Image 1: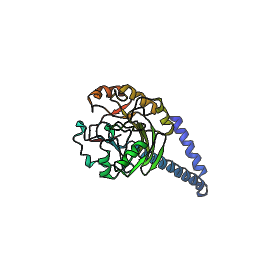
Image 2: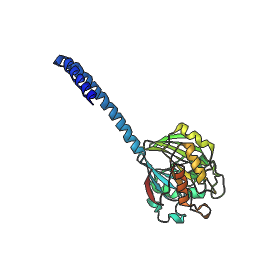
Image 3: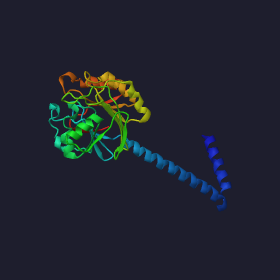
Image 4: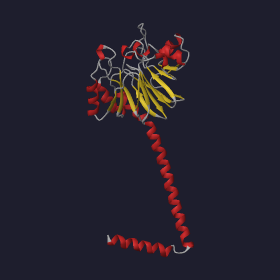
Length: 284
């Protein structure tokens, strides 16, 4: 302790001798002012970055059952795979009250498109799907349609969407060809996420983080017709996320899932699985 006081005494004597007169004090004050302004600049830059990061971790997601969910990003309501009215588990949902600026369709199966006409015509939303789905939309009177195929990317007012491949069949309810099943990677100022659509686990997923740093992913976890719990955990590792919204479970008897088992499995893998109640909104 005596050494410390001695050092401080010497330091005080040094500054007194060097800056005892005003003309000697001016350079010191200029240096001090420069250091202060430089430090304030760094603080403001880091504070802005911190605010951006905090904002990115609070994306609002509303779950409407099965694989239907909505993300509120950059002031826009983005809806995915609307299948609500036939779903007994979603009978509390008022379909006509759903807001949508954009609707994305992952593939042509009825349990992903059945309510798209109704919601699109109610809201005037722009509807996107592969080229076969795009043509089907036009034939069904949805003029605000936009094609997007795997590998393609478009910019919209909410951000950017890239279409990627999903490993799953795709056909319309009449059995006609529905094009290639797709997933979507969305990049927005509020955060980035990947919706895989109905899919099996595929090594193609490891390419996604090469182009986009994701904040969360949306994966089917009901097994049988898509990935199950174990595969979704591996998919999470491939795309580099630790927050996952689970979809495509419980709607039909052959995809009923043990919720606690799923939550525990993800937790054991150091991942956070979200299983929100139907018609509820959460922050991810």
